[in-house]
Image 1 (spheres, rainbow, N blue to C red):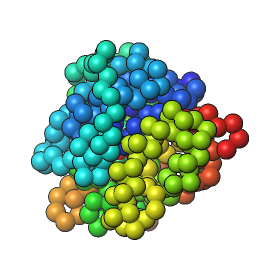
Image 2: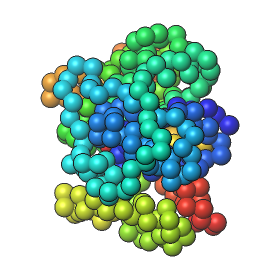
Image 3: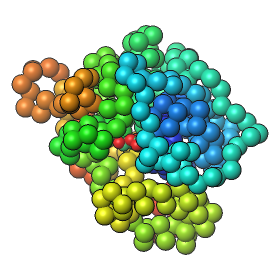
Image 4: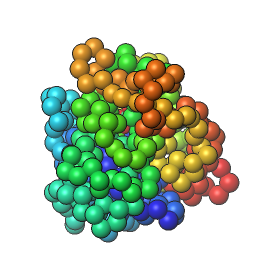
Length: 311
Ligand code: BDR
Ligand code: CA
């Protein structure tokens, strides 16, 4: 099993990603850290606790992190995720345990004690950049660094060119790509856009696992409505769970290595630039994921999260 810290901003799709991680026997979630993103980090932490309660894993600690990006003003995504970050589902709050403060300290302390801990970053990269800026060498032995963010050829989801996590804190993203001493596995919109939760998948989930199926239906309803109103799409794209899935099953995704950087200012703020033709002759710092086994992803998700026997 692999020890992993999940840094996230739950968030509807982050919550589904957390469920998948908690139900993956090959992943040992040592802690969850929250960052300002879809919602402020205190709300994200409460949502992480709700998911932990559902999975009966309240033994896992949750830490609240950065409440604003490194430099730019903070813009949440509560229009897409609901004011409560869980599609305005009014899911009951967890009161018997609370989150702790100090996400960045937790990351630093964990990597000091267990340098090979893997990192899964599902939100803006503010906490990660802050930890990196304390001591880059802490990250030298990280076993696997996977993030959901960016876009190679697939345009943006919050500007014509930018994906939300990179756009929300472009400086943090740029610093992580510039300084991280291990390769970044970038699970961007090129592959996550293929993961669409459809009404029939949702019905199947409710059938095989009424309890979790009800939770997933409740939190995704708002997302479904948003996709229909904005894009006339039936169903909703869920980005973050794919980044968890690939930690367990690397062959779900394939891509190529390239030097990648992130634009910090101007009209292209938050755009990921992938030097796929090596104009800059710089060593590859990123594995850019470009193709995904969609059926394989759903098989893993349905089996692990809902307990479907033969999806
Ligand atoms: C990313 O932004 C958030 O809205 C999602 O949780 C995901 O991490 C997709 O652009
Ligand atoms: Ca997220």
